Length: 477
RNA sequence: GCCCCCGUGGUGUAGCGGUUAACAUGCCUGGUUCUCAGCCAGGAGAUCGAGGGUUCGAUUCCCUUCGGGGGUACCA
Image (cartoon, rainbow, N blue to C red; front, side, top):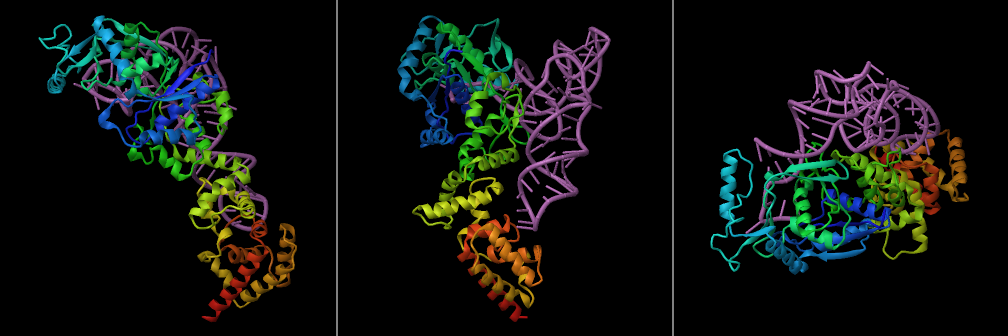
C-alpha cells in the first residue's frame, strides 16, 4: 500500500473520551504500520461548546500515549474561508442552496413530523424558492440531496451499506454564524489533507452517505471509510460517565502505563487473529490491519485492562520501573526529592521484588511502604507473634545474630534458621514473626529476599523495636 | 416512529460448510512455598440469540424474527 494518511479529529468540547482515544490508537497504528502519516485536526466549529484547555489536553494526552502526529494540529476555525469558498461553489452549481428557515420553524416542523409518525427531516422549503429573501439576511447553506435513488458505500469493516436518498436530509453545510458543520468541514478537510483512510466510530456510518454525495458533488474521490464499532459499558449501552471512568485522563491518573492502555484499547474491536494479547507497541504496529477489525461492539472490561496493565508492569526493567515509581513514592512522602544513585538503586531493588504484585503503578506505594518508612503498625493478624514470654528474647537474639552476618539472602536465611533452631523454632514459626517485626505485614515477598533489600541496619533495628514492643505488651497483661 | 449496524462461555476474541467449538480474562480447585501475590496443573462456564430454509452436513450461506446498539441537530 502506498503511504496512507489517517487523521485524528477530535472536537475540543471536553476531556477526551476513552472510546475516541481508541480510534486515535487505530488511526495511529494503521499509519505507522504502513509508513504513512498521522494527522491531528481540531474540529472546533461549534463555538458554543468550546472548552478552555481542551486542545492542550488532547495534545498532552496523545503525547503521553506516544501517539505522535506528523502534521497539525490543524484548526478548522482557521479555515473558514476555505469552507465558504467550496460552499459557494456548490451553491453556484445548484448542488447546495441558501436557507432562511428559522430554528423555530424547524423545531415546529420536526415536532409535527414526530407527532404524525413520519420520518423527521427538513421539508426543503427553501430549496427551489428563496421566498424573496436575500443573501444579506442571516441564513444557512444546505446541501441539495438527490430526491430519489440510493447512496451506497463500502465500509472496510462492514462491507457494503446503502441508504435511501429520500430519507436523507438536506443537511446544513454552513451554519448561520458562518462556521461549517462537521458534515461539510470534515469532507473538505479530508480531501484537502489527502486523508486516505477515515477511521472513526460506528456512530458516523449513518451520516456517511451525506459525505459520499458531497464528495461526488465536489468532484472528489472519497477516501476509504473505516468504522470500528463502539465501546460499550457493562450494560451494553454506549460507554458513558455512569459506567465509571470514561475520560482518558482518569486512566492516566489511576496510573496505567501508556503501553498498557494502548495495548488494551487496541484489543477492543481488533484482534491479531492469533493467541497474542500482551503486545508491545512495536508488535502492535507490526500486527495491525483492517482485516482484524471486528464489526460488533465491545464491552469495556476493567478487569482485563488490569490484567494487561500487570503484564506490562512486569515487562519493565527494574530501573525503568523505579524511575516511574519515584514520583509516586515522593508524592507519598516515602522518598525524598533529589534523586541519587544510591536511593535509585534501592528503589529498583524494591521494584524488582514487588513488581509482580502491581496492577497499577501507584500500587507500589501501598505495597512497599515499609521499605521506605519505619513508621508502620503491626498487622492485626500478625500480633500473635509478639505474645508470650519468649517473644522478646527471640527478636533480641535474632537482631544479635544478624549483626555479624554477611548481608546477602543466603547468609541471612542460614543465620535466621539457625537462630530459630536453637530456640526450638523452625520454618513458619521463625519466619512469620520475623516478617511481622521487619515489615509489619503478614504477607509479602520471600522474607529473606526482602530482608536482603531492606539492609542490615534497618532489619536489626526493627527486630530490636519488635523485641521492645513484645516486652511492652506482655508486661501489660 | 423511521433508517442503519450488530448478535460465538460473564467479558474480549479465534474459527467462517464437516472441530471434542479454540485462546485470553474473570471465577473455582489442587500443587509449589515462609505468607500473600505470582507461577504450574486442573475445573466449571456456549443448545455458536431464536425459527425456518439451502445442503449429505450448518456457528459458518439465505430469509424471517427477537434482542442490543447507533443515527435521525444551524453537536461532533
